[in-house]
Image (cartoon, helix red, strand yellow):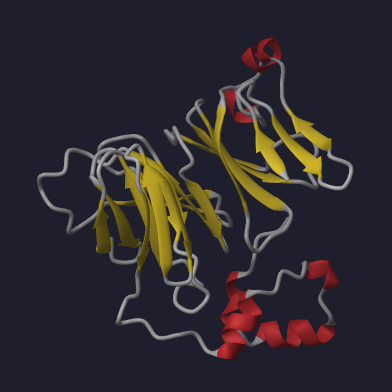
Length: 257
């Protein structure tokens, strides 16, 4: 289990001993003397943290220092990647395969996609079909749509905040809103499982809805089984590599170093 704290620290806990195995934190005075590009820990309160669903070693965090950081629990000295200019103020980051999405509290260009292999911003998702009367995005909650049947490759994201007055399912490829669900007040949390999406916020209502894109077809059984595998590279057999060599997964790969 990984926990982020108000004092800027990030701790990795052993769930059997209930003790912190690793603590990532740098003293404030020492942090001030370090060049920004050399800093490998947060300097502000940690406000979002997410473990990778496929890579057991990797997790991401964001803090009020306008940074998004990628960590590997095998690296004890600090984060392995830092992305700057991400104004995350709530639980609005998520990981899937080789990508990380982040929702910032800003009026436009709030949803961004980051490439964990190239170690750079992939795109700012500028919505093409949002209604004109929306007064900014201001994202508080952001998740990939978790559906092994329809969204294994991370085509869709679910976002909510204080500007749009609704939860939106966004197609990250064409930047269109596939579906939206109105809500009173700001959206503070979203999650999904299969065709179900749940969300809540400042209004005294917890909502569960169903989403399915009629244009989608289910992944075949072989693709689903392969997507659930989380075997590290060093544990793969020769037969595993033969299977991967003929698949798109081998070309893109899971980043796990």
